[in-house]
Length: 403
View: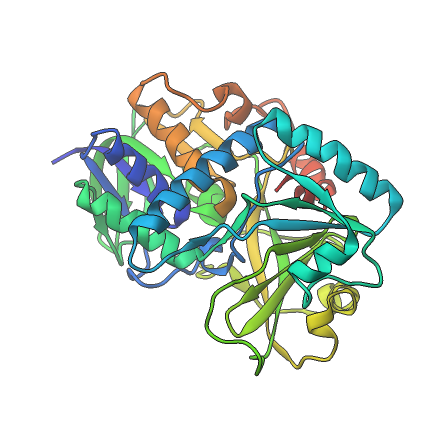
């Protein structure tokens, strides 16, 4: 039997595409993934879960707003929440950043996103463990931002997709995309190269996307980069409440931090970009942590966040995610490979919007969130590999402000 849609990858993006397809009344959907159902070895499983909406890039604003609405709906309907609308504080540590915060309020108003500038004392009162009282001059507060549990969120999307008729095949590694006269007609899986035929194949494998696409002669204009995240050890004054204060960001220092139940976590972009070339043998988005690459940046970050100054350090991880030259995801049909659709280089913050966009494109509903040309996987067709790589890596710190 040939399914109309075969989705490769059941992380948050692939699950979102399946969810939105069944929400639109299309149940001829199969999702395949090499992992077991309860394992998330890709970027989804490592994501810190920050869902911010305000961005200088209009497309990201629209995708994030749609994602927040979807996550709120799923969370409110679930027995166990997976999204908490706790808000976000962007701490101004310079007069210039404080001026920018006032401009951001006006920018948010254009997108119907409430934002306000608060003074340093108010920011400290909202998140005393995370706001540096000595450096804060004030903050931009966006109350409708929030934090997700990426694993719970993904499982909620999967469960809802299954209830709508989608089928998931776990422990089913895809060896290659199946081609016939240059058209993608399905995927070959497992050790016996079983053909799973489909009218449309959606590639949503995150960091592994370029490997499968490349075997079919399709270049994906994205670079995989490594990124550090650090947790404290469990804190005696914290309980299992997932989060009860806003996410805190330090834009001028590219540092972000939040509560994770009994621990605090932070990430930083203030280090030399560390690209990674994916291979078929790579089984996890978590790579060995190298202090030479990230140690100085984390030391500066932990000195800024009160909760980290005297706390014992806990787990530190090096996670890999995909980055494009313009910081936008790749969403839409692949050029030169009819039947292949791309849903790559998306973050948790935009995954629901990306899923809705691709589902509507695939079914031809015309109900699109953003101009498809802006997200087209082919928008860098005339760029060299070297230019794609150099531009994406140059913009590594810039994605902090775009997401």
